[in-house]
Length: 514
Image (tube, rainbow, N blue to C red; front, side, top):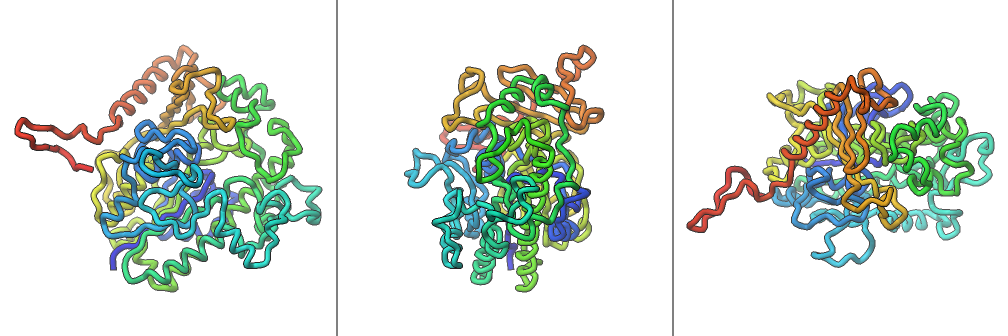
C-alpha cells in the first residue's frame, strides 16, 4: 500500500507550547509521543499572518511576496498550484475536515458563500468555516439548544461555581468535551478513514483551537491553575512599550487590532487587564491545547488500531502564533517571536526514518517547506513555484549540504483592520508590507515606509531593545538589510523564468515545469 497523508493544523498555537521541546507547564502527552516516534522541529516558523495568508504559504509552498494573498479574504491567484492539486496528479483525492481559510480567485469562480473558501483540489468532507454548519447540526441532534445559546455556541456556562473569583475565560463551554469541534472533526475523520482504506488517502484536519474565543470544555477549563501561570513578558507600562516603534503603538492603541478573547464584551481594556485575567487567559489557552492533544491522541490511536499507522505520514503544525499579552499585545499581528514561531512534528513512517525517531531539529525550517515535504513523500514532483524544500532530509538522516541559516516572515499592516483593510498612518496600500529576517543572533524588521528595527536575540531574547539607531550596530543593521534584500531577490516569483522560447518554436527548460 502507498503512503497515506494526515496533515494536521491548529490555529494560533505558540511554537514553544509542547512538552516534547521543553515547555514546563503545557501538557501534550499525545503530541509528545508522536514527536518521540518522529521528529520535532524546534525552530519552525510560519511565514505570514493572519490565518488566510499564513495558510496560503502552507498550501502553496510560496512566500507571501510571491503568492500575494496578503489579508484574510485577499484572493489567491488561480494560476498558482497547491499541495492538493499536485497530490491529485499522484492519484490522491485530498479531503478536508475543518477549514483552509483561502480566498478564491473571483475571476475563475463565483464566490457564493464568503471569503473562507476551500483550497482548490480539496474535497470538503466536513467544512467547518466560521458558520460551522455541520457541527451545529450535530449539536442539535445531540439535544443542545443552539438557537437559544447566549452570545454564541462558544458561550460559557452561566453561574458556574467560583467563576466570579476567576478570570473571564475560566467558566467552561456549554458543550461537553466529547461534543467539541475538535472531537467532532476527529470523529468525522475516523469515519472517513474507515471507509477509504482501499487506496492511499490524503486527509487535512484543521482544528480551530486554541484560536479565540478562549473557552474550553470541562475538565480542560480547569486543568491549569491561573496562579501557576507566568505573567506576560513586557515593560512595566504599556506606554513604555509603545516607545519601541510606531507600529507597536498603533497596534496596541487601536481596539480593533485584536479579536476578543471571550464571546462577551471585555470587562477591562486589553492594555489594563489585571494580572489575574492575564494568567487565567493563559491557563485556558493551555487547557484548549490539552483538549486538542487528547483528540489527536484519539485519532492516532485509531490509525494504530486499524493497522495503518505505519503507512501514514503525519504532520502537525500551526499557521501562526499568539502574543498572549507579551509586550501588551494579543492576537497575531506583531513582529515578535510569539507571532511567527510555531510547532512542527513530522512522523515519517518509512524505514529510512527509523534512525531519526525522537530527534529534535534545531535548524530553521519554514511553513513553505511542508508542501515540498508531502509531495516528496509520495513521489510527486515539486513545482517550480515552491520557495521551500522537503524536510525528509531531516527525518531520514540525509542532511543536505546546504540549508538555510535564517527564518523569514512577512505581514501586511492592514491586517488588524476595521473590516475594510484601511491602511494605518494614512499610507497607501502598497506601503504596508513588513519583512522580517532572523537567525541565531539577530532579528531585523524592515517596513516599507516606517523605521526598521534590529534586535540582538542572544543578549535580548525578549526583544525589548531596538538597536537600529545605535552607532555600534550600524554595520549589523546594514548587513541584515542586505541579507533581506538578497533573500527577496533570490526568491522572486519565477514560474516561467527558466524557460526559453527558441527561433524554431520549441520551449526549452533548464528546470522542472509547473
